[in-house]
Image (cartoon, rainbow, N blue to C red; front, side, top):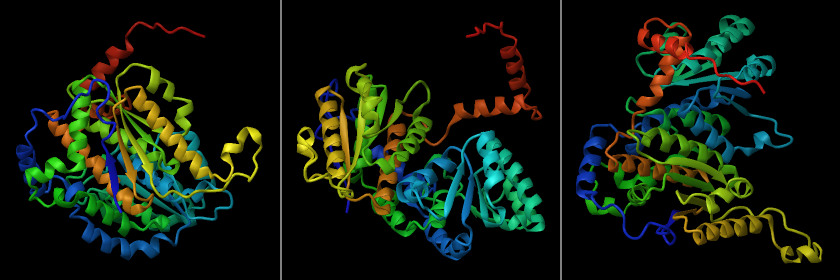
Length: 447
């Protein structure tokens, strides 16, 4: 079982030959080994898994005593869990489903919060609060509201219905956990949110839903292979698909391809596009560099975005994801009528496959550089492999651009300004900026 990476259509348009000029595999391998051995790259060495596997077994039965899990988290704390939920637990959105249910509160939305507090049965609900720092303002705000609701409904038993995933030693959530005996798991110190799906962040909700997390992690470990060993050889590295994809992405940027389409032709895996968008944008959008990720799902976006992909500005490359052994689904009638006779004895899966090939060919004929990723199966094992492939591609692309793909300095400014607007102590410079911003002349136009 594998992910086949097809380079047949990678060099189109302005891409003319092998990429990675100026990139030294020996230097890159040396940096990789140093950072792995320092514990800087836990999403590659996956050293946390052996301990986490034991803890997941210990809490599995207690998780499944609940019918509902309300996940409070944003960004990397929500996108990974949602991708796994949608890919492997679609029955929650299908008729007749009778639990378990995972609800993900990943935004500041009064309508959704009021609905959850009004309709969820508190005695059957576990609230999973995820914030690595323990102080993410949106998540803490949600927690304060839900904790009040739980305490009103369940009195002193409220803390039995909470589970925190946060920093092992510090932060608001860690303090609350200590004071109220709330169950917790930790996020590895060096593991950023957008790289955290294969930690407790993604695996606790996956375990609650009944996903085979061992297979997911086996795929991840097989996918990272020698990358997480701390002993990577430069020749091995230069052949790894993650490194080669980074070289291709670098060449796209050098040739002024400013957007990267992630086209998913596995409908249930559409949310992996949103997960990848955060991974790519937050890791690489620095110093005026990077490219804009564009999540797209086949066949839906053939009827919305593809006109721009094919006939708009020639500034896009494409990662094209398909699955090899998807279910065929129902078959069309033996005689669907003269107009549709070519569908006779064909299945819904045949239609999806034809649409994927048609779109790939159309992109190729319109000179869109394209790398085709084909999953051996659409199962947890291959999801684990895909996750680490895209994470390693992102890491190496950042290094090749000479930026840090593990931080997100620009995002912090908006967070500080929001806190200043709410009256948080300190932040005097941000409060002055807000005053200046609000003092701008009013140029609104009514419609």
